[in-house]
Length: 125
Image (cartoon, rainbow, N blue to C red; front, top):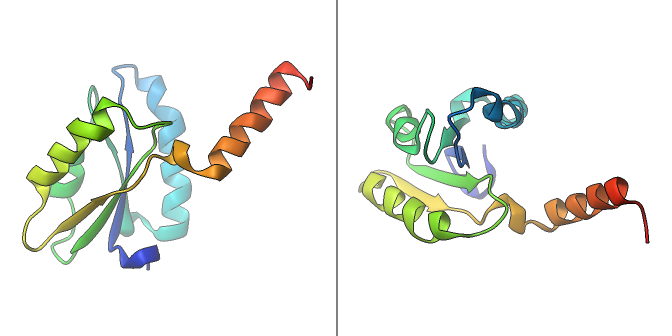
């Protein structure tokens, strides 16, 4: 079972026409499926590549009622303020609740990891 009683989680990345760009996200997704299972998780892209958020929702099992969308974005921008909420609103039904979570970049663990990586690349002051 996923936390907060979600039936399914969709990891949402931005998207790029470059197939190599997808590799880090597919790697993260593969690790997530090892923990939560492929039947409880999906990977989707906001634009420029597939599967889209619409594709991921269309592929959900009919018993799924509650979905969390976790953006693999560093910050909230136009896409997370306007585009993705509009997509989610269009995809929700009386039988399917979809919640947009804060972007992964808002997480303190991610911010600390980025600070550590920056220090390793630049050295300590």
